[in-house]
Structures are given as structure tokens and as C-alpha cells.
Length: 249
Image (cartoon, rainbow, N blue to C red; front, side, top):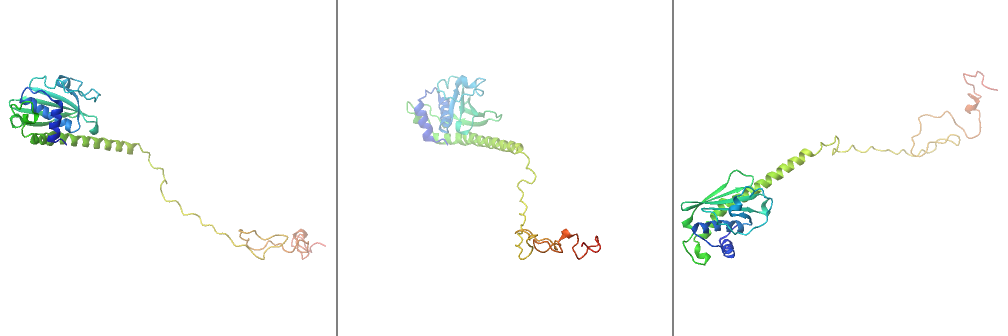
């Protein structure tokens, strides 16, 4: 934010030559932009050229030739801290008033301020710059309230709009979620370990191993490793089988 002390310090540092009261007010406007962080990229006839906005350079230039035009002043500024858009400021003399217009690059609606020159500029003042102005504090506040603060607000709105557009494009480019992705997983399958059977089986047909449920019913096979009368190799055994009436001798 510009202040009276900073604006006056900038005027003293530049040591401009004033031809009239209009020069004083126009230079106060210029110094207020510098005090708010802007840098001068063109002034005078160069600021009114067709490529004043299109020139990509933001290099700072000197203030020479700033009052070469008759009843008109022009400045082009850039503020690297608030975006790359440039600002064209024109000051037009209209009778005893100075009409200030500020147009941001890419905008069609300029900001305007009407200044009564006699309310803020002394007719003389010698070489002491503080005596060449009056009510300088009030003038700086008007420039800040009607021009600078609104430029700052439009720069923030433009930056927010660009951020919103970028966010929208990012959301549009994201792929659709894969079906099932992000959904809770199914509960794990419960595993039951059967107990170790005790006292079943024999040395011919051993019982089931640990972790295996025993089969339902018997195998129809019993006994030991010795071949007995009930061994299946006897085709029914000595006791007889319907397929072999009377059994085997």
C-alpha cells in the first residue's frame, strides 16, 4: 500500500522537472504505483505504441520522456508479485482537472479517477518537493482507494479464476474409479484346523494325518499287517460272500 512518505521519497529520488501543476499530479500518480510494487516498463510515446501490452519484456525502464506529450501522460507498469498482466495508465488534462484511467491487460473496463489539480498541487514551491504539493496524503489515499486497491483485487480474482479452471481441468482428466477399488475387502475366510485323531487306524491302513478330518464310517479293512480270514484278498473271506457261494476252500 502506498503512503505519503514513500511517495514523496520516490519523487525526491527521481528529481523530476515540473513544467506545470499537471506534471506534479501526474508524477504523484506514477510514484504511487512504484510505491505499491509496480515497475515501469514504458512511458511517454512508447507507452502509447501498439506493442505496449504485447511486448513480453518486464524490464524496468527509466522515467525519461514521461512528460513529452502535450496535455497527456502515459505509463505502462508490471507487477511481478501479482501476475504477468501489465497495466496502462493514462492521465488526460481536462481544464483544471486530471483524468486518470488505468486499464489492465486483457480487460475492457478501465478504472477511473478525477483529480482537481488545484487541490493538491502548489503553483510554485522552488526546489523543495514537499512544498510543491498540498494534501499529498489525501491524494495518495484517493489513488490507492480508487485505482491501486481495485487493481490488486482484480489480480487476485483473476488468479483465483485461473486456479479454479486448472482444478476443473484436472478433475476432468482424472480416470473413472475402477469398480471395487476403494471398497472394503471381504472378511477373511475362517480356517478350522481339525483335531488330531487318537486311537483310530492300524498298521495296515493308518489313521488320517494331523489336520485331516477322519472319513465317515470304516474302511471295511481291519486287522494288522498279517493276512487273516477277513482280508479282502480272500474275496469275501472265509465267512462267505454272495459272489462266491460257500466261500473259498
